[in-house]
Image 1 (spheres, rainbow over the protein chains, first blue to last red):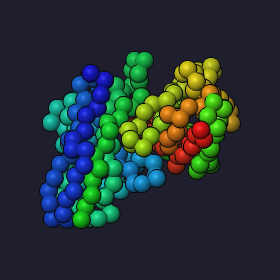
Image 2: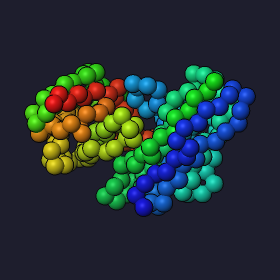
Image 3: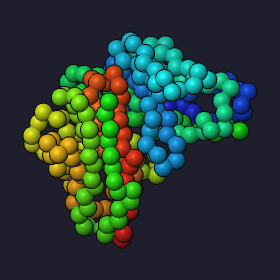
Image 4: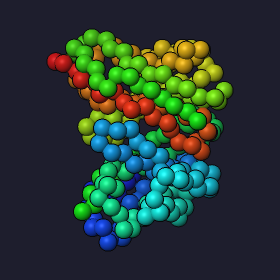
Length: 116
Length: 115
């Protein structure tokens, strides 16, 4: 399995809802990431879970919260979002520092989020 | 901190011709990696090519090759024999934290292939 699987592909939610985006990989990768991408812009890093340590981009609001139940899963919990949070959310994984694939990120197909 | 600059918002090339996308970067790290990723309208980011900074030899992958000029901090992508399927947004990116910091992306270049 060489894929990063993201669900759901599309999500529409109201500003008072609580929802989650899920990301799963079975490549034995040691690092997983969440990126936010607005239309015609590059992805912006939100969170990194690398070697069991969570790193947070300080500009990300607290209404986004990551959860890593195990080394294959990285969820993104969404609560009280704003319309400006509407974007494509990309999950990625990498094997980390070592080996021939070191530092290469494999991306999922993305979850398109719309906040009404 | 790292920065990546792509100065061409859009490029257009005839099918079967060759096109070069430009990228410059800045980093204080001695050990880093550079990448070109492709994002077609299907939106999935796909790795095109990867270059380790300590390697002088330019990376190649079939029709895709890079011109890595370390002293100039330049990392351009050449696409030979352009095909309709090459139409996409191309992002140049750098990484130096061993995976801990993710990728730093440029703003992207939209590549149009004219049939």
